Length: 216
Length: 216
DNA sequence: AATAAAATTTAGATTAGTCTAAATTTATTA
DNA sequence: TAATAAATTTAGACTAATCTAAATTTTATT
Image (cartoon, rainbow over all chains, first blue to last red; front, side, top):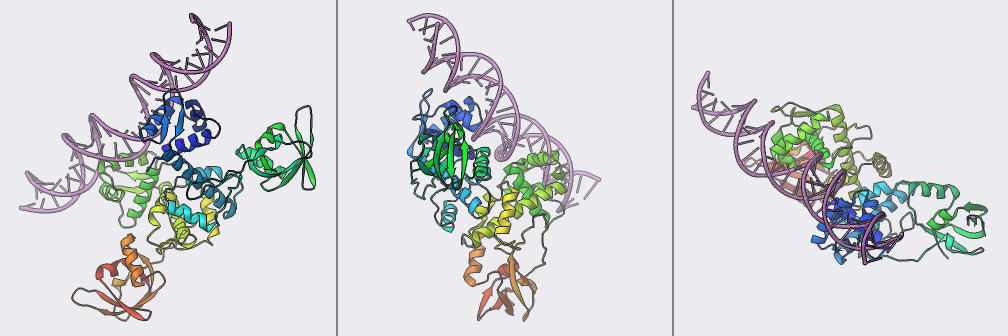
């Protein structure tokens, strides 16, 4: 099997690949809280194992086997997060760090049984899709609240920022997964948005609107 | 916090301490599948951290903080084993390796909630007591089947050997935790024992009788 | 008590993953 | 397009955990 560090690199490359064709050394260094030179060393190692395609100075992509490993780790991460929230009653802003450790428990049999135990959930507590045991990921395309107009509405289905601070803020405003919102007004000055949420209205900054995802 | 290797050493020292006052370098090397020289290095490190009392050539004991860490790891191990068997329907011979990984998940809040989720179980699937969140361990004193006489009886409450092979053998014979047995006969030649188990009788070797634990 | 055997420690090396500082390559811009 | 800035890689070093082989200490045996 692969080491913990290797798994974390593959997972990070996968996440960064969603926003850019090739993932750069510096992007990885920033995400993994390490130095560019350390990243280069690891990229060589992963390239030797044929888990990534690496051309010096040109960034990397995952090979099919590398992607398979990355998706499996993400599957584990999201299933454990679901477990922590649904079975152990943690809040959605409390589970990330624990799941960062649990995603490295190696047994696939274990994770498949956990999946069954919880009834094959499709989304984790932050609305991110949970890959199935074959690595397939349901892609529902979401848009940020900031992308809709006055009088349009949608259902909160995800977040772009996963930080505990942002999640706590949303929780306090009642802006949680599954809630229906409608744009009542957009303040011209700073483009902040006034939302209708159940019986009340809440005003959110453009920054928040960019990080809150909905389906129409 | 401590590294994975440090945690495994502390756990091993704890287990070996139950059978001997001082734990020797070689005992640890054997249990941890490593070399005596590696053990010496780690013992120095643990002694520096004041987790063990180490006098060169004289073996080691745990300090109170070292013991606390060891017991906490054993608590996690046994709670995860219980979870795997009771919630995910693994068999008692399948869970050890998985729990070896899971015991290192760091959050104590997580393990306390898991404990609550399962109803504060007292014993793991092999009959070993689960330390409570304060590190207290219920010591019920068991004796091997081999220690009782003809016509005496007892209830199976634990095993001395935890290997998958032994557990599978017991399972096949129906000799599982909670079952009542009675000694019907002891064969003089090899001191193997004939047991009454529910409606049938099973014959077990002295070796097996030594490793199967009961209460009267 | 002297010596042999066993257990343990020390010395020196190795691997994975990381780091700093210097060198190199690529991208930007004047 | 030449100079400069930014990104990346290389070189050399460090730590944790391990190893082999040699040296040392303890224990057992004559």
